[in-house]
Amino acid sequence: MLVTVLTPSFNRAEYLPELYRSLLTQDVDLEWLIVDDGSQDDTEEVVRELKAQSPFPIRYRRQPNLGKHWALNHGVAVAEGEVIAQVDSDDLMCPGALRRLLEHWRDVSDPRVIGLLGHCVDESGRLIGTRFPSEPIDANWQEMTYRYRVTGDKSGIFRTDILQAHPFPEVSGYVAESVVWRRIGRRYLTRHVNEEIVVCRASAANRITGRPFAEVASGAKLQHGITLSDDIAWLRSRPAAFCKAAVHYSRACFHLKEPVWSRALELDVAISRAMVLGGVPLGWLLYQRDVRRSLR
Image (cartoon, rainbow, N blue to C red; front, side, top):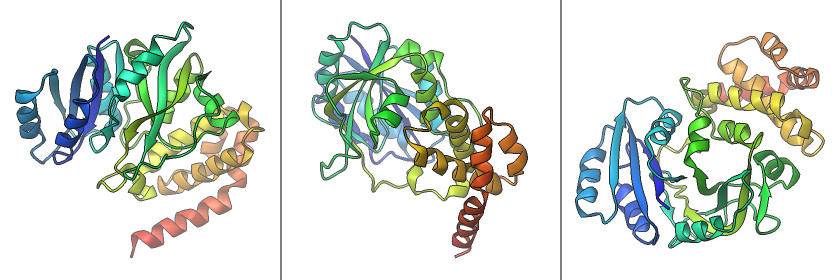
């Protein structure tokens, strides 16, 4: 089975050789597809040098600087593998991780299972988030998030045709990956295994988690709006998570200069509208804190 390792990249030329070396340890039939999101460093030259020495195919695609979600859509559309493993340009694959995932994949018989997820670890080898409650466990995104309360970055492989059928919304600004996983979770299951798959380099520059809230406000509003509209049936499982989403929804509206009242009325569920309006005072305070921090 051919695996497409899909790597969106923006000004990360210095990290690509180490990711390449980690792919050499995978022991599977793979192609490496790099989508350059308008980098201004020597990414293209670095990729050309790696391609000249690589035992596996390396493909390079370039697009204007539109954002990671656009780069992922671009890569998914042209991927040649039956499954895709998304690996960020500043991360590394654990030795043999893809081989182990494919071994688990051979055991899948349920057609509703369209991918496999394992864990991410930090640079010191510590697990990011929590482990899965059992292994293997087949569940959708909502069950794993709300029922089992699993946290932290996860990584794995997904059927290419399913990802092609569920692209990211092509809007400006940051779009959280959970927007896609929620949509997929409404129809399909993922198998979860307690395997270490990816090493996340938290110290790398330009990571989304380090950006000011104002820079990701449009994507945050989209993400939290979907949570409050589509996932509200899970409110009793994790009420605090939904209260948090409501507060950040109003916070995002303040950053975007959009009226919270009218945006709340656009939500499909009455209780979600009420939660957003109830979260306005805290959302306003967080917005004011963001503004003060930006002026320092």
